[in-house]
Length: 151
Image (cartoon, rainbow, N blue to C red; front, side, top):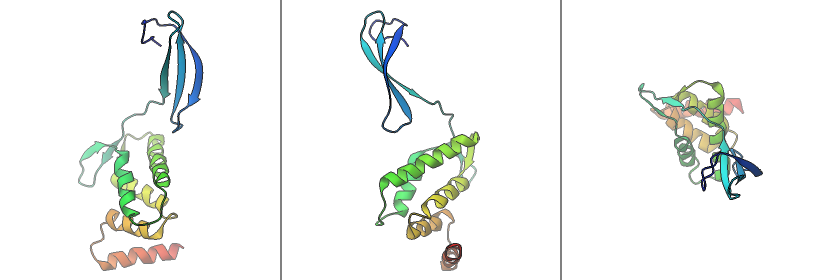
């Protein structure tokens, strides 16, 4: 690791700790040449994920879109935002673990529905109504009936 002060290549790790999100490791290093200390972060390199939309267009994965869609579904409902963030992280890691570089919005929507269903029934139906594009009341009632049968 190159020292940011003197440019020397040799340093030693003085302290290592997990970051608050446990997604990286914080390392305190000391330059062997100038004895000054600096901090580095080590993270796992992730490959970019491409999301294939229903119209066939493609865009890069954005975890904020998943989080925002869940926040809208849980509007005026009792939910801890930390739970929604955890779900978003689970979905992102699940997609990364598949080693597929492309994922459909349908697959992402299904993952969200599976995870919010146990948290709140109303939020689940709200999300499903947007995700499945209900066109009329019958579609809405059908989804509720399917939900009740699974309980």
